[in-house]
Image 1: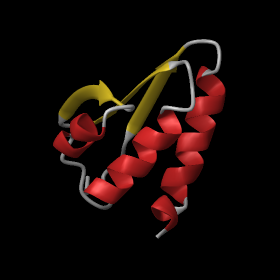
Image 2: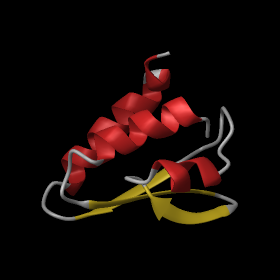
Image 3: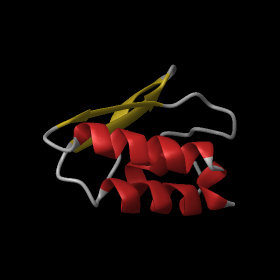
Image 4: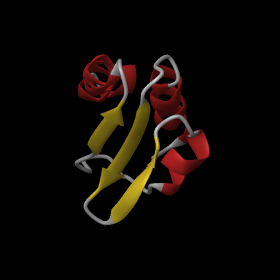
Length: 75
């Protein structure tokens, strides 16, 4: 994942109190609030991401992150 999408994803995730993790088929979950961890996820364009969240606002967080990803990180 490049810096800009990682920054946007971490920024959105940081708005929520929930613990949020992102993973894909060949990588363990990383903290969605950490730009560096997201970049180390090595998710290239077209990689299917898996988002999990735990906490009071977990559903809202997942919905907002899903919208960001579906919008192509607003690019």
